[in-house]
Length: 329
Image 1: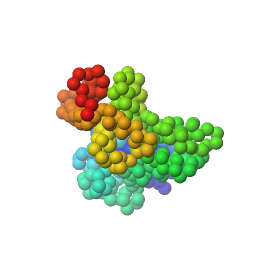
Image 2: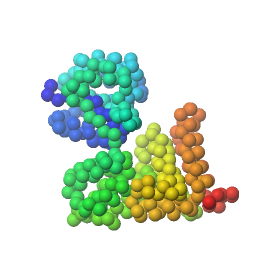
Image 3: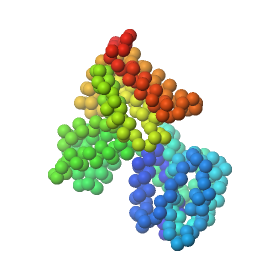
Image 4: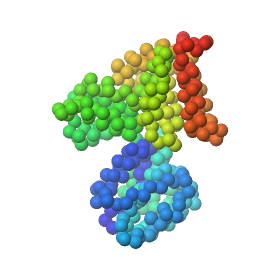
């Protein structure tokens, strides 16, 4: 078998994982493989093990994707180690370790590092690692998109795009699709086009807070916020993370740390205006709202949809200008 039997992919960004798997399938002439996806934070069914070790009736090949493999328990790693030793030639396995990266490096479980399958993968270079998009890596993400779509831009425009794009690959891809249309037949991206990026996670909450703090109807804003988060299981935590980032930026700007908030100048000016208008008391309350939603879910006291509904109600109440005793300091 000329291609790898399996590959470990360590990355917290689902869109980057999807893109890398597609690249690996294409580079190994495996694009037509039947794709089978399993989730390691659920009990792995017997079909998963069959897909690894058994030939199909008609000899077709399978690309087996194991998502959230960082959640696998010790006993399952032992079983997987044994299964990989007798992996079918018709199976191409992608093991996705999706834990959050820490300063010490890739979040590879200690129990996995002891397994033969990991040691062999490292020796064969059957591993791929990415911490996701940040200020450095997003430049490469943009370069790849521009080259693929024949988009040109001046360096100042690229710098603005780096700062404006959300650091989530799926959201960033949606914004780049929008910019490709805006570039028109000339395929040239201009500074004015950057202002079209208005619906990243942070900008969603900026628009929400900006609109509702001025007495606007939040229904349409919330519809746009929620539309950008299609995976229901993770939506609440994506939104609470976005809200926390927004609150932290507003707090820093209100307390003399504006230079530490990395945003395009026009966005920073808008956020400073919002921070001044809603005041420190309401910004601080945002952290309480986030904590209440997350604790409710993690303790099992609330279902995700209940926590989301209560979070929407709390934010709407917090920013309603006509509410009594509302601090604007």
